[in-house]
Image (cartoon, rainbow, N blue to C red; front, top):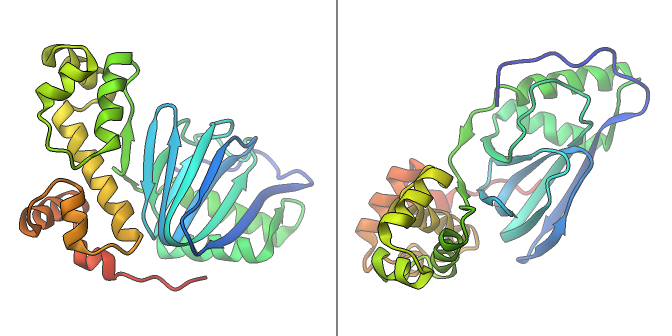
Length: 261
């Protein structure tokens, strides 16, 4: 996440880390809400999707999503989701990210999260809890981020194009046709997408397809059906695209089953 920083001052009396554990066997949408604390949501199995006004973040198993305090968000689950959440006081440490990001969870951090959830509330006045909090924060500051996000553009025309793509990532309409539906020239939309998301419209649609594939595979769909759903007429090209984006084949990804905790 960033360079290691120290825990601020002496941990004061009262909780500093709260936890929440839940198993969701069927898909569910948790409506928009906010928290006063920073939030780290870990998926030990299944897939979590977080949506805000600025974009969406897809969180496969063994990853987590970091959300800063006060960020309004919605959560959607795919497949059997074992969700473990940490809520951290905003004053615990300097240097926490101010934006939503997806991170890889190391085996050590996984065990720290699970131990915190078993305890329930970590109180800074308790010496054992204080040590666990310090190690948790140290680990969170050095987590590698992963590119499982899709930023939304701000311009209304670009937003219309983005929502058209998101509504049907596998649609084979040309980028030019999507631009016409959005009421802007391709040159204008390319400029808007790149300046506001860092991607061309083609790159943005490709990322939308990757994230949709992660959601569907997490929900248990077959590789063939996922390939068709995200716009591929056969599996070979889809497998190549997925492996390039994720680092493994969709079949290997789908077979990777984590223990329900």
